[in-house]
Amino acid sequence: MDTIEQVIQEVKKAVIGKDENIKKIVATMLARGHILLEDIPGVGKTNLTLALSKALSLDYRRMQFTSDVLPGDVTGYVIYNQKKNDFEYKKGPVLCNLFLADEINRTSPKTQAALLEVMEEGRTTVDGITYELPKPFTVLATQNPYGSAGTQLLPDSQLDRFMMRLSMGYPSFDDEIEILKRKHNTNPLDSIKAVCTPQDIISIQNEVDKVFVDDKIYDYIVRLVHETRNHDMIMQGASPRTSISLLKACKAIAFMNKRDYVVPSDIKEIIYDVLGHRIIMKYDAKIKGVQPQEIIGSVLKNVKEPKIKVC
View 1 (spheres, helix red, strand yellow):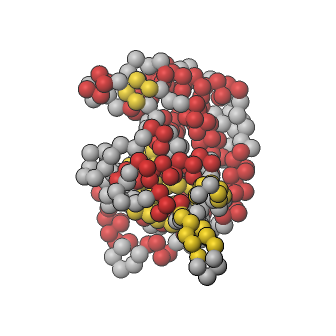
View 2 (cartoon, one colour):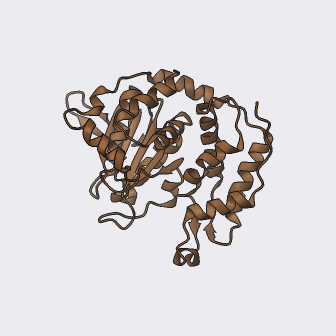
View 3 (spheres, rainbow, N blue to C red):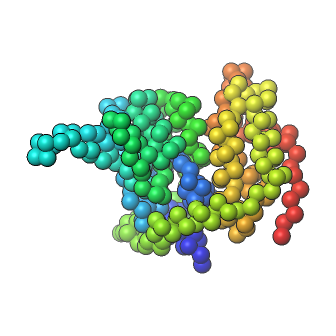
């Protein structure tokens, strides 16, 4: 069993029936991306993050985003040290390997903006001084569905920095019974073992970078993204950052699928999660109840799939 399979098996000890989500989150981390988990409270979003941090032996920090959280609470701040007669930087919780931004859509846009540099460049600037974040680094943010008490829409610039948006969903009937049994006398998180180190993750990320991409795949990705910009139900199509995210994510998926090259099925496996939060539908489409997933499905039908020889 390779390292990635071991990680997934460890996480599954505490997260029941969500194998697809676990795979996609691990793939996003291997692609050096960030994840947005959108769902109602209590379906296991935080539990999943804790399980990942233990299995990957990552430096983990969690922050509850509320309306009174300030940017300095996230990135850190500079204070005057009387003993040293000098100013010193107090690190914020974001300086870690895995940062859980819990209920990110409950805080102010000003505080959300503190994460933009962090997520895009892997560093943060406080009082004109830039601090590099540890590697590997991933933001895993959760948000309650828009319209829940105390929530607000995330700005487009923030959403666009998440490689994937996923939803946990309710467990099945049998899975929920298994959850109750496992939590009857013990906490499943206590049984999770660290099966790799941060350096192992960096090494695997470098291997993912080497996954081969045929020119036909580059063409297919760009044509899919361009189709969202010309769709009659989409007001704002996907950005060039979407193309980059789709490329990186499908390379990670191909690697997890035991291949060193990308095929169209890798793209189809994650395209809904990469594009769904990046397109803005026209008002008429919203009134008709058309969902982004339906539009992405039509995009896939409209763009011809390339023929790639599978070895």
